[in-house]
Every structure is written in C-alpha cells, then in structure tokens.
Length: 442
Image (tube, rainbow, N blue to C red; front, side, top):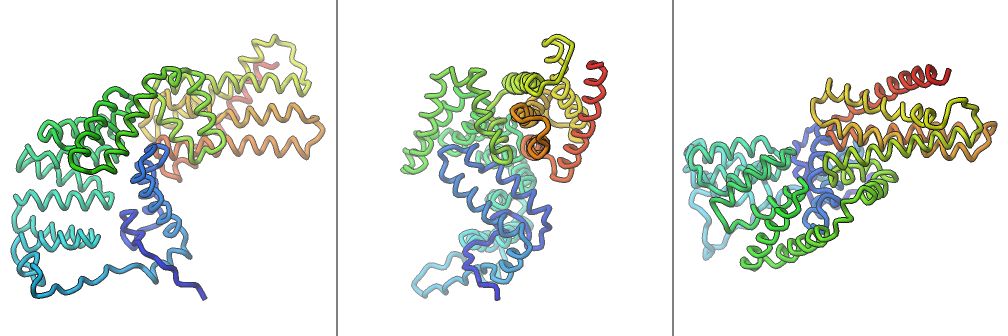
C-alpha cells in the first residue's frame, strides 16, 4: 500500500500549470522557471535558490506518473478561514456575496493571502468587468499572473493599465519582469527604466534592472543599479534584501577590478569546469557568462585543441599518413567545421534564433568529448577492441548529450526538436566528414 506523503505545497501552483496539465506543459514550465531561478545564474541569492528548490521538487513529483498520481490523491487544499469574531474588523462588506468592484477586489486580496491565486484572478477579473478602469485590480491580477508564470497575461494587464494611466510605475515594473522571464533583456531594461523614471525610490526596479544589466555583461551599470537598490532597501528597513544586494555589489565590483577574469584562458578553463563534466547542468551558466566574441574565442579554442587531440591520437595509434603534420591538423578540423555548418543551417531553418557565435560555441563543446576519447584510445593497443569500442561509443554518446543539452538550454528548443536536430547533425556531420577526410587522405 502506497504511503501517504506529507505534502505541504501545491506543486501545480508552484509550476504555474493546471492540475490536468500534460507532461509536455509541465516540462516547458519547469524549463522556463529553471532558467530564471537557477542558482548558477543567481549567485548568492537565497530567494532564487529556495524557489529553484521548490520548482525542482514540484517537477520531480509531477513528471513521474506514479508520484503524480499519489500527489493528486493528497493534494493540499486551501485551509478554511477562521470565522472572524464580532470585535474584529471585517475586511469588506458583502464578503459572502460580493456585488461591487471593491467587494470582488477585497475578496481577491483575501484569496491572495491564502495563495489561492487562480481564484483571486477570477475575483480581480470580475472587479475589472464591473469597473474597466480599476487600475489596482489590473495590478493585482498582473501580480497573480506573474506568480503563475503567465507572462503574456502580465504584459496584457500592464498594457491596459498604461492605457488608463501611463504614469503607473508598478505597471512598467511588472512589464519588465515579464519581458525578462521571456528572455527579452533589453526591452526589460527599458521597462525598468520607465518604472524608475516615475518612481525613483522603487528598490525592486533598481534591483532587477541591475540583474538584467549583469546578464547583458554591463557590469558598471549593474553595480550602479544594485548599489542604489541596496540603499533603498536599507531605508525601508528591509535588511535581508539589503545584505543580499550589497553582497552582489561587492562581488561584481571585485570582478570589475580583476580584468584577468575576462582573459581567454580564464573563460576557457571556466567553461571546461562548468560544462565538460556536467553538460546537463553547467552548459547554460557557462554560455550565459560569455559575450558574443568570447563565445567565438572559447568555441574556437575547443575546436583547435580537439584537432590537436585527433592528430596526437593518429600518431599514438601508429596510423601511417604521408602528408605533413599541418595538413593532418587541417583535416582533423573538418568535424569541428562540419558541426558549425550543419548546426547553423538547421538552426536557421527550424529555430530562427541564436547566432553564429552560438553555433561555434556549441560545436566546440560538443566535439571535445570525442577528441578526449580519441586521446584515450591512443594509449590503448588497437587490437584491444574490448576497450577501444566502449571508448568510441562513450565519446560519441557524450558528444551527442552535450549537443542536445546545448539546444535545450542555450537555445531553449523543445526536447523533441532538440533530439531530432542532434540526430540529423550527427548523421550529416559523419557523412560529410567521412567524404572530405577520405578525399584528402587519398
């Protein structure tokens, strides 16, 4: 008999999906939230770390049919509110049967406090229907939609508020949060800037504009915004947020004073430490910290070193090759260039996002495991197939895993499309590389 879990959270609400959501919808919601709250992208941010822990736990349960079925039988229900005593102030008249826009709005506030977000949205919607210019109802509905991950709904509400009153700073703030969640960094910065222009003492707008500047590698602007946010948090006696923000400011300032962190060697070694041993979890942080030119540099270094590994492997195995070493080195670069070419073509045909720098970076990190496997094979006698064959398959498998993880995380492609693109790329790359290498080797 299955044991009854002591569930305390509604995992559907945490992921922002309906209770009858499909597995695909659950995976999409998890990937979107993981990109936003991943600890590697939010260093020293305990709020993001706790949120990431919650969504990971929710995904672990809801993505497993057995666990989800057990959870559905014990899904946490909202606690009934304790009836108020006669001497307590009733929050609004008509609580049981709201009639006016304010009645619905106040009931929505109560449901917000008990985390009944979807029911609260319904109440705010009713308030708006009765009063289409009810700005506070729009803003609260906007807040609830953001909590549930409905970024398009947030943008729609912000648009309506700004049509009614273009001076509402909070509308620009939530517009920025939604744009940032959707991956539109520069438009998000514009929204935060508009919010700050209308409310100079809006610490959250300063904070998240600083985070957006940090992601776009504009460290000076990030430090300025985060320092201002820290000061405002302290003025509001929000000392936890102040300490967290100030710590981020200190770390960014320290990095700014250490230019060696932008060196090619540092970027390459950091990428290896993040992505090589953990492509499923470290590839996105490795990619996110690099600018376009740095992506090209790091990807190219991967390609050149991989070519060198192939050349060394040829000589270690004892394969005879009449051409000079430099020609052998160029031939060994063919798989790397083929990965760039096929990746760029398929990305352009199917996804229409990303850049050529991204193609070079992904080709480099994908070819590296195969090159390292080739070096290991060089230490093994060619006749020892019991060891050589597993190394070959291991290198190919790891390269395929890295490539697919790149498409899932970096380009945010669906799992089905990423798997298909990875398979096609490996097939095309193998055929093209074999034909070119054979023609040069003859």
